[in-house]
Amino acid sequence: MIQDKDIPQITAPSMRKIMVATAIMMIVAAVILVVAILPAEYGIDPVGTGKALGLTDLAKASAKTAVPAEFAEAIILPVLDPVEKKSRWGESPTLKGAFLAQPSRFNVDSREFTIKPGEGLEIKYNMKRGAGLVYSWIATGKVLYDFHGQPDVKPKGREGTDYFESYERDDKEGRDQFHGTLIASRTGIHGWFWENTGSEPVTIKLVTAGFYDWVFQNVNDKQSALKIISPDLIPSHPKIPDERLPH
View 1 (cartoon, rainbow, N blue to C red):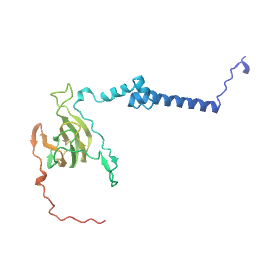
View 2: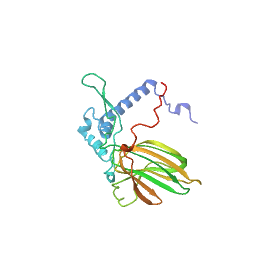
View 3: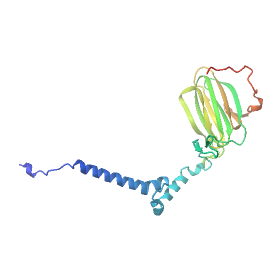
View 4: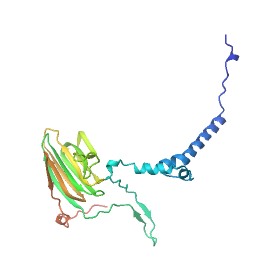
């Protein structure tokens, strides 16, 4: 028969020992973070150990290979994050990085089209990388759509194919309107493919303004280039007098 004295006695560590051990682990983790992880992953080397051990080279290599080689033509656009700069004479500050300059003036486009049940239609705008497009489309019923772009320079191995890159897609329930702003990540045509899966015709009104050259249309696999509206043709002032809004 086993006596109590034969059973090894386990003594729980004191709270002080637990706190000391926790503190030691946190210190070790902080040291590893500063000495190895920050230089290797982010190129941040506050104490110089990353350069001495060659870890900062890993961060540089990761940054260079962040975009696959086949997307060599892609451009990673900076997120608009304005930085305040002090002015020379003390007046209001200057915000740098608040806009994307464009090489030429914008164009506008407004069109209305009807899609029969079971049919699809595609409208896309030819844009250079970095160009902006402000858009709104409203439909009389829900339609499935794919908001996408087709770059002029295809990824390696996709040359000669109908390659495209989707930005937003709804191929289940559909929507009856869509509004937003697009910044073209690559030179090519950018826009929508709509499909009417309902039993009634659907009319879509599309209005855009942006830095594009021409409009691409595809109806029942019949492709064509459409003219855009020059801002010079827009009346300088609406015929209906402006309405004063209450303050």
